Every structure is written in structure tokens, then in C-alpha cells.
Image (tube, rainbow, N blue to C red):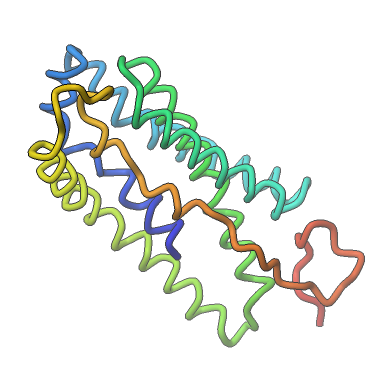
Length: 192
């Protein structure tokens, strides 16, 4: 749920920081649009194809790739000094999110019984739904908090609104077992 919350607020977290981003990176409106929309465009465009790839190559492997990519791109965006790396990092974060959502939904089908599955999916969607409006609130708080504490020798002009809690991207060391030993990488639906 924490990963889905992060995906949700990452959609809107930069909106309140756009004036600061424009000033610090000396970019115009079109570049700001790319910074904001690179994440959403890639996320929406790759959601279905990456779900199919996960079914084919294994959900666990792809989920770990998505988590690692999302975390690495988040850190890259935090310390980027120009618009190009920020846009690229946001696009990679969109790829990570597009991997995670279908993989999480597919894993829910394996982990929960049909009677419990509705509750699990509801919690997942609730996390995404809470994350989207939480983005501007969290972004504003981070921007406000960091503006007073940042020194003039900071290596990044506005790191905190770009920072996404990368610990949310840490995978659980426990992988739930599947009752079918022939199941490849946890991608088989529950038997019976």
C-alpha cells in the first residue's frame, strides 16, 4: 500500500513547486509541462504492455525492477541540476509506476482468497486515491520546510519537492509461497 501511495502522490507532488522549479532551473512553461507530464504520460502509456510482460517473464522479477527503477529515478531527480535529467528521471519513474500497479494487482490475486480479494483491491485503490490529493500537500510542506533550512551552499536548488520517500520502494524480504511448485516467479493464479 505504501508503494501505491507513493505512486499516487508522485502524480501531483510537483504542482506546488513549479514556480520555484522555473526560477531555480531557469525553464519556461513548456519545460515545466514536460517535467510534470513525463511521469503521467509514460505511466499511462506503458501500464497495459508492462502488465503483459510481467505475466510472461515473472511478476516478482519485474516488480523488483520497477521498485529499483522508481527509487533510483527518484534519487536522480532529487539531485539533478537541469531540466533534462529531471524530465528523464520522471519518465523512468513513470515506467516504474507502470510496472508496479499491474504487478501489485496480479499478486493480490495470488495472495488473497476470492472472499478477501475485494477488500485488498479496495485498500490498494484507496492508497492511490489518497496519494493523489496528498501530493500537493506533501510537496508544499516539503518546499516550505526546506526553504528555511536550506543553506546557500546546497548542491541542489530545490531538492525536497523532488524527493519521493525512496524507502517506500524497498521490497519486502519475504516472498509469499505459492502452492503450485511449477509456478514460474509467482505468476500463476491460485489453483482450485
